[in-house]
Length: 404
Length: 200
Image (cartoon, rainbow over all chains, first blue to last red; front, top):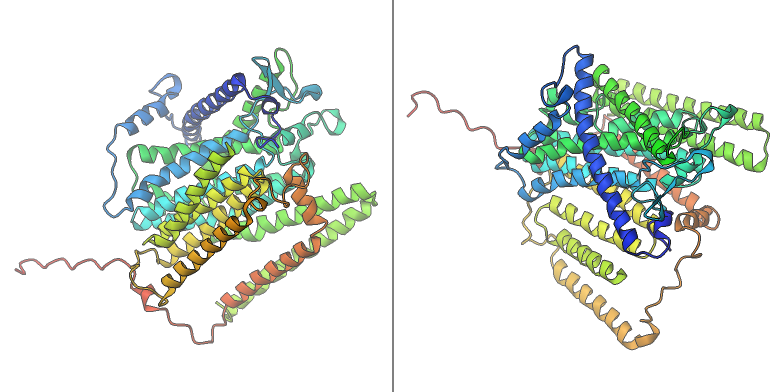
């Protein structure tokens, strides 16, 4: 059985050419991620400064585009400090634990290929057929969830090992927040998997290729899953990335920057890079799951290039959305954060999965569509009412002082 | 290739297990536990059980150990411990004895069974079908053959969650349980008083 999944490159004889192609893909993905992260940091600073009516970085390179490179070189030559009360080994390990999952996350993202007119997105390199993604394991999107659950260790251990108070508070916040929002994230991925019937990211993109309703509206999961999982995923991903308005983990005004307070030099740079790299990857994963990834019409020229262009366009759109939200929405309070996660996003996505599953069963069994919808809505509303009643009761009892 | 991966990940699993037992610091022990769980995930991958591997990482490494670390940090029980004192007397001797017995039993089975046991072939619990991916197979089995067990487990877990919530929200008029002393005095030492001007 082929462990690396559906990629036709690895299904036949594995010889030197195959190994070279895999190495080429690794180098390309690595370089793309680094350059994209560098540009993302510049883009975020530039857009935020536009929002705040100032110029932003403008000295290094044209439009200040090389500012990140200059900052990186500066970080390299700074003195590397390890605080006296820090737990040495864990302190050194933590930044690496943050950076490595950030790199690994991108391996399953399909970033190109021709998906128009029934093509399956494969390209030919050196006479071999392959997909434009580093790996296409059968477990696909679960790998992304696994890596994002590993990423929390970097933040947690950095805060703990610093031997200082604010970082510790930050890391306790981080672990609570990430575990809470991982549930909502996973449940909205469930909706996508339910609709496309596969975990493989290539399969998910394939299922969204072509056009759906009316012949011109794209067949995206955004529409097929009914918007709600998309909104849940978008909110939960922002919390998972610790981006504003959910950046309580590193709230500068309260925690001095939290888990990376005690870090300096290249170790701090690793945290910084990983944070922006995760933003890029999360945008790529949202595009893959809900907006058809590289799928899109091929106009003139090679089809695979259009795949790359569509992918980059969609991804940049999301990155702009991230920066837009960051520069306009104020930070939420901690209880609001937890309430949103546990009392809104998780019940909502659970109910929505039930509804979606009912539709699929109804389609298989040829049930009456109208009655199914009616019963589904009634059950959903009942569940919502019960949840409301439970929350109201617990609030009333807390106000009465019956329970803590 | 399979053997090489097995040897490396088995070494990681063993080293992690040893670290869990021998670390003086509870956080280091938890980190060693992560190494062990990760090694087991790689062993699953090596056997072609991708779903089990990734579930191992998501559930155990990603959620359970995070919660263990969370509680340790929240309660501040992450100080170094003295390993010389045994909480249960005779515990270590007994553990060593049981371990030796277990090893002996395993060796005995291998030596007595000879070729009948060590065939090198996959066990009878291998994949049901070599063509269908094991994600599909596990899913189908769970929701057809074992659907009752699955539903009962789901009910049990729900009851456990509700029970935990009920137990943790104790009524206010009861006498509050006093905090153990070790929890109140684990903070930092108080700042030493600034010597007054001209005191010496």
